Each structure stands twice: as C-alpha cells, then as structure tokens.
Amino acid sequence: MTKRIWQGRVDSTRRSVVMQGFLASAGAVLASAPAARAFDLPRPAKLRDADNGIETSGRGSLRAHAEARGLLIGCAVNMSLLEQQPSYGRVIAEQFNVVVGENCMKWAALRPTSTTFDFKQADALVAFAEEHKLKVRGHNLCWHENLPKWFAATATKENARQLLTDHIHTVAGRYKGRIHSWDVVNEAIWIKDGRSDGMRVSPWLELIGPEYVEIAFRAARDADPTAILTYNDYGLEYDTPDELAKRAAVLSLIERLQAAGAPLQAVGIQSHLRTGDIASLGDGVHDFIKKLHKRRLDSFITEMDVNDDGLSEEDVTQQDRDVATVYKHYLQEVLKEQSVKAVLTWGLADQQSWLQAEKERPKHPERAQRPLLLGVSDGVYSPKPAFYATRSALDEAKRR
Ligand code: XIL
Image (cartoon, rainbow, N blue to C red; front, side, top):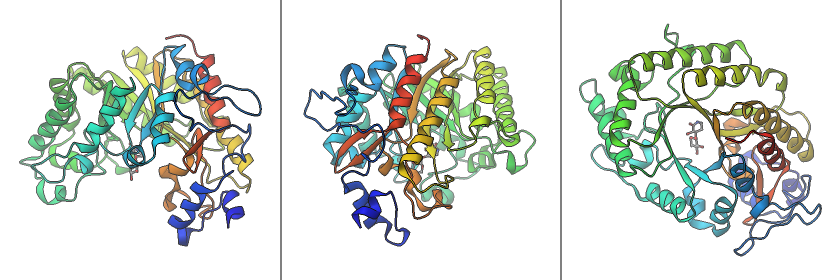
C-alpha cells in the first residue's frame, strides 16, 4: 500500500484511511525534485536543503524573500491542524508574514445561532498571528456559501439587512485595528445567473437586492476604519470568453460602488488555477490589475493553488513540474504590477488542500492532487518545486 500511495494515488472508496496513509508515508514528497529536507526542526529552525545546499528557512524563507520586495506572502490556515500539529504553526510562522483563516471567520463557523457568536477559532487565529508577527486577512463577511443551517429559515426580506450589518459590526468590530484586509464581499458575480449586471442570484441579493454589496462595505468601514476593504472573487485569471466577461462584470460592479462612494480599496483575485492552458493565463489578468490600479485599487492574490486533475501523466515528478510552471508563469505576470501587494496560497501543504475532495478530482479520482508549495509527511514539511518557483518569482518582482 505504501508504494501505491507513494505514487500519489488515492482510493476514493477508502479515502480517509488512504489519505492518512498518504500523509504518513515517508517520501511522498521527497519524490519531487529538487529533493529537500524537512521544515520540522526545533526553533530556531535552520533549514538547509540537504541535496542542493539551498537554504529554505531564515534568509531563505519565502517570508524573507517577500519582505525584501515589500510583499506579503501567506497561506490559508486550518485551525484543527494549527491546534493539533506543532510543526504546522512553526512552518507557517517561519515561511509567511500573513495568514487567512480557511474557514474560521466564515458565517458557519462564527454563528452557531442567529443571536450568538462563537469566536473561539477566529480568536485563536488572530492570537497565533500576533504572537508570530503575521498579518491577518479576514475572510469573509458576506458570501452566498457557508451560511449556517439556521440562515434559510431565519433570514427574511425584513430582517436580512439588519442581520448582515449586525454581523459585520460585531465581527469586524471585534478585530478592529488588527486585520490587514477584510474580504467584505466574496464571489458576488456569476454571469450564468443571467442578470444584466452579472450579479449572482445569492440569498443576499434575493433578500436585500444588489445594494447589499454597498451596505456590507459601509458596515465594514464603520466597524474597522483601518482594514483594507476588499472585494474577492474567482474566475478572473484566464483569457477565455467567460473569464473576460467576468472581469468586465467585476469592473462594472466596482465602478458602481465607487460612484456611490462605497469604501472599497482592493480586489482579491482568488487564483484557483490549473495545469495546462498556460498560454491563456496572464495577459487578461494583467490588464485587469492595471485597470484596478487606475481606479486606485490594490490587488491581492488571495487563494492560489493549481489543480492538476487534468494532467494525463501518472507521474508525481511531472505533476510537480507542471504545477511549479504555473506558479512561476502566473506570479511573474501579476507581480509585474506594483499594485499587487500580497500572494496567499489556499492551504499549506498538498495533503491538506481542499482540492483533495473527490468532487475536485473528477478526471483522476484515484490520484491525489499536488497543488501547493509544500508537501507533508508525518508532520514533516518539505518544499516542492512550486516553492522554489514562487520564491524566484518574488525575487524578480520590483520593490513595493
Ligand atoms: C473552501 C475551504 O477550503 C473548504 O475547506 C470549505 O469546505 C469550503 O470553502 N473560494 C473561497 C474559499 O473563497 O472560502 C473556499 O474555501 C474555496 C473557494
């Protein structure tokens, strides 16, 4: 079984068992090139790549390379792992200067009932970040997904506006002055819903109307005068007709918000990418970032990962090479613009990625994805080719 897992295969019928084995199988990550040594060393972590002498901690960390360019580099944090695995937090603290909760600041996590809040995990994230001098991105205050179970039965046209503004005042107010940037509204554009303004027919839109976006931004500004207020979305990265239309719809939404005087300061480009299609990745998003800058908006790469389900080769070395190529190409392109201030990946290590869910692997349900910068085995983290690709893209960026 170890060998099969070592090759990166997942038995979908026994996924959890096999994924644990995958996590535990020594060498799962060392199969990738360049081979590298572990991150899980006692502090101060002195990490040196055993085989090629490349230092990947301290001066060699992503954090050091990003800071030399005035950039933020980070990842989404899974609170269970942060609580349970000491090396997880150590690696994050060493490699990054910004974090975002993968789920802990979403409605479903914060709102056990319509009248109560549970801040345990969100508080733990902020405390961890402050202890290690990491900035925190808040994700998110308003989204059509991840709403608590009680929401559908409780929210009405009469109370939805109050529900939204109370939530934002309470959550953004609690962390006032301690959040680098809030994703105030997430994924409000969905062209396929057929509206002329491109807006997604979400519970918020249906209950409040399209002005819910502006309402959310104003509430966030009232609650926290210093956080950078961000609109975050996906499907903005490729030069396809769909994504061209989505970029245009996001720009129109932004124009409307700015015309109304809404306090919007940045756009989060999620950047859930895929292997292949590299030729259609770069020009459109670059142009989009320039247009945002003309509107005095910064851009953040907020949720980067590379889905390799489409790759036909059954070879982890090839998976890692193709994934790294996408990181390098994309980051070189977007970092040309100095208004791009932050790059975050959606998770720390491959084995912990949301892309391991079966629905994200329709073409190769038997194969694990390798979408991130690191791999982990037995709590021991190793840099992958995508780590080095990212680091060298940071090095090429102009100083912010
Ligand atoms: C995902 C998380 O990674 C999963 O653990 C969760 O089950 C669903 O949400 N766009 C977003 C993120 O803005 O919040 C999503 O995160 C991934 C897509």
